[in-house]
Image (cartoon, rainbow, N blue to C red):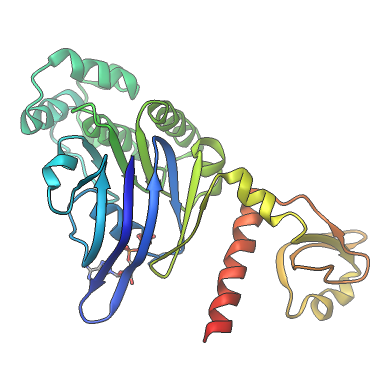
Length: 292
Ligand code: ATP
């Protein structure tokens, strides 16, 4: 179990990149989501002990890893957002290099990991010729060398093609069956397909943490569907939080986030996870507007 208590990171004089975050992470996959600049990377870097919190505690099985970073480092696998492979090394050489750095002396483990990430057939190829997905998979393989209990991956599926994304999700879900996996993503289908928990950040704050189903449940009765004549669309939708607008022969079908029926004839609609998250975002923005 990983526990964050009142974690704060301030850059310079007043950029509160992470602002009083309290979070408990059991094993399984947790996805961290939020707009660019919400504080996801900073939070992950603090958990990975490569950035020091300005305040608060981060506890791994009760041990404060801010004071004792080695307690985390010995059990951590980390794939940063900008992880680069060395183009002149083959996949095997790359793994051997990292194994030596991490003090892993088991050649069979390297082979097993290359198989796990489905790169064993490419073990002797130079990484320079690898696709984005293959490089990310090699990045994961190096992160797993020390058989970590905690795996942190920053935007693992960014820039991958759909097939590679699928493979990558499958791999991370499998790892999440036994380990604590924390990943950040902007892609809702990543969450739908692998994350058991979802932590939403906004302007450095953790605004919600729950299962994807609970997000959808909370958004029920907040999402409405209504079809309006095309010529009235702009007038009727002005000022409303339109989640989706689909034009067709009969007019425009709108899906709208609203606490009550926003227009005559609007019917409650079953929210998708993406809509539930958008609804949540609107709710956060409204609370901020009210506070301002
Ligand atoms: P993205 O999705 O774009 O990666 P993020 O949610 O990971 O964004 P962070 O990269 O953690 O967000 O940034 C949070 C805030 O902290 C932003 O305002 C950013 O400009 C600021 N920030 C991040 N790193 C530094 C730094 N080293 N020095 C100063 N400010 C920083």
